[in-house]
Amino acid sequence: MNNIYNTQITPSLQMVTPEGLAAYRTWLQTTLSALPLPDNPTPPGWATLKPHEQTVVRLIAGGCTTADIADRQNLSKDTIHSQRTVINRKLGLSGTNCLVRFAERHQAWLLQPPPA
Image 1 (cartoon, one colour):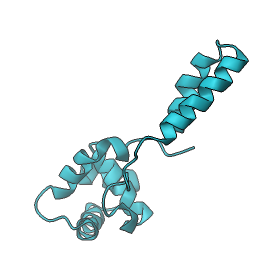
Image 2 (tube, helix red, strand yellow):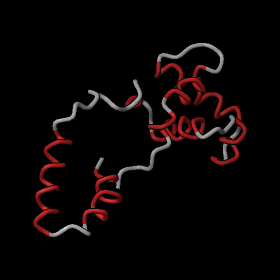
Image 3 (spheres, rainbow, N blue to C red):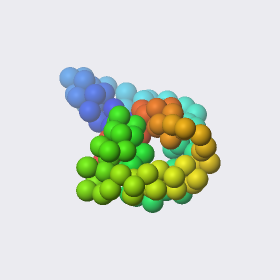
Protein backbone atom coordinates (compact mmCIF):
# COMPACT_ATOMS: atom_id res chain seq x y z
CA MET A 1 0.00 0.00 0.00
CA ASN A 2 2.87 2.41 0.80
CA ASN A 3 4.30 1.86 -2.68
CA ILE A 4 1.04 2.99 -4.36
CA TYR A 5 0.81 5.92 -1.96
CA ASN A 6 4.38 7.02 -2.69
CA THR A 7 4.43 6.40 -6.45
CA GLN A 8 0.93 7.36 -7.55
CA ILE A 9 -1.06 9.27 -4.96
CA THR A 10 1.60 11.62 -3.55
CA PRO A 11 2.80 12.94 -6.94
CA SER A 12 -0.79 13.71 -7.91
CA LEU A 13 -1.39 15.53 -4.66
CA GLN A 14 1.71 17.68 -4.99
CA MET A 15 -0.32 19.91 -7.28
CA VAL A 16 -2.59 20.73 -4.30
CA THR A 17 -1.78 23.42 -1.73
CA PRO A 18 0.42 22.30 1.18
CA GLU A 19 -2.47 22.70 3.64
CA GLY A 20 -4.84 20.71 1.45
CA LEU A 21 -2.22 18.06 0.88
CA ALA A 22 -1.53 17.66 4.60
CA ALA A 23 -5.23 17.37 5.37
CA TYR A 24 -5.78 14.87 2.57
CA ARG A 25 -2.73 12.82 3.59
CA THR A 26 -4.05 12.61 7.16
CA TRP A 27 -7.52 11.61 5.93
CA LEU A 28 -6.11 9.02 3.55
CA GLN A 29 -3.83 7.43 6.15
CA THR A 30 -6.72 7.25 8.64
CA THR A 31 -9.03 5.75 6.04
CA LEU A 32 -6.51 3.20 4.78
CA SER A 33 -5.46 2.13 8.26
CA ALA A 34 -9.11 1.35 9.05
CA LEU A 35 -9.41 -1.10 6.15
CA PRO A 36 -9.30 -4.75 7.16
CA LEU A 37 -6.31 -6.70 5.93
CA PRO A 38 -6.05 -10.46 5.70
CA ASP A 39 -4.48 -12.05 8.76
CA ASN A 40 -1.75 -13.57 6.62
CA PRO A 41 -1.42 -12.25 3.07
CA THR A 42 1.37 -14.71 2.27
CA PRO A 43 0.53 -18.08 0.74
CA PRO A 44 -0.02 -20.82 3.34
CA GLY A 45 3.20 -22.56 4.33
CA TRP A 46 5.41 -19.92 2.71
CA ALA A 47 7.39 -19.24 5.89
CA THR A 48 8.42 -22.91 6.10
CA LEU A 49 10.33 -22.68 2.82
CA LYS A 50 14.03 -21.89 2.64
CA PRO A 51 15.04 -18.95 0.41
CA HIS A 52 16.19 -21.21 -2.45
CA GLU A 53 12.87 -23.08 -2.26
CA GLN A 54 10.98 -19.78 -2.37
CA THR A 55 12.98 -18.88 -5.47
CA VAL A 56 11.92 -22.14 -7.13
CA VAL A 57 8.25 -21.42 -6.39
CA ARG A 58 8.57 -17.87 -7.73
CA LEU A 59 10.19 -19.15 -10.91
CA ILE A 60 7.37 -21.66 -11.33
CA ALA A 61 4.87 -18.82 -10.87
CA GLY A 62 6.74 -16.98 -13.62
CA GLY A 63 6.19 -19.89 -15.99
CA CYS A 64 9.54 -21.69 -15.71
CA THR A 65 9.76 -25.44 -16.13
CA THR A 66 12.02 -27.69 -14.06
CA ALA A 67 14.57 -27.58 -16.90
CA ASP A 68 14.37 -23.76 -17.06
CA ILE A 69 14.92 -23.49 -13.31
CA ALA A 70 17.84 -25.93 -13.45
CA ASP A 71 19.47 -23.83 -16.18
CA ARG A 72 18.92 -20.55 -14.30
CA GLN A 73 20.17 -21.95 -11.00
CA ASN A 74 23.05 -23.87 -12.63
CA LEU A 75 21.77 -27.09 -11.03
CA SER A 76 20.68 -30.45 -12.41
CA LYS A 77 17.05 -31.19 -13.25
CA ASP A 78 17.21 -33.98 -10.63
CA THR A 79 18.16 -31.45 -7.95
CA ILE A 80 15.25 -29.18 -8.89
CA HIS A 81 12.92 -32.17 -8.96
CA SER A 82 14.08 -33.08 -5.43
CA GLN A 83 13.57 -29.49 -4.28
CA ARG A 84 10.05 -29.51 -5.72
CA THR A 85 9.32 -32.72 -3.81
CA VAL A 86 10.47 -31.10 -0.55
CA ILE A 87 8.46 -27.95 -1.32
CA ASN A 88 5.34 -30.03 -1.96
CA ARG A 89 5.78 -31.79 1.37
CA LYS A 90 6.33 -28.52 3.27
CA LEU A 91 3.27 -26.93 1.66
CA GLY A 92 1.11 -30.02 2.18
CA LEU A 93 0.62 -30.51 -1.56
CA SER A 94 0.19 -33.80 -3.36
CA GLY A 95 -0.54 -34.87 -6.90
CA THR A 96 0.74 -34.12 -10.36
CA ASN A 97 1.35 -30.42 -11.03
CA CYS A 98 0.08 -29.43 -7.57
CA LEU A 99 2.98 -27.01 -7.15
CA VAL A 100 2.20 -25.41 -10.51
CA ARG A 101 -1.44 -24.94 -9.44
CA PHE A 102 -0.28 -23.49 -6.09
CA ALA A 103 2.02 -21.04 -7.92
CA GLU A 104 -0.76 -20.05 -10.32
CA ARG A 105 -3.22 -19.50 -7.45
CA HIS A 106 -0.75 -17.21 -5.64
CA GLN A 107 0.92 -15.76 -8.73
CA ALA A 108 0.06 -12.11 -8.04
CA TRP A 109 1.67 -12.27 -4.58
CA LEU A 110 4.63 -14.40 -5.67
CA LEU A 111 5.58 -12.13 -8.55
CA GLN A 112 5.21 -8.78 -6.78
CA PRO A 113 8.44 -6.83 -6.35
CA PRO A 114 10.11 -7.23 -2.96
CA PRO A 115 9.41 -4.45 -0.44
CA ALA A 116 11.85 -1.55 -0.64
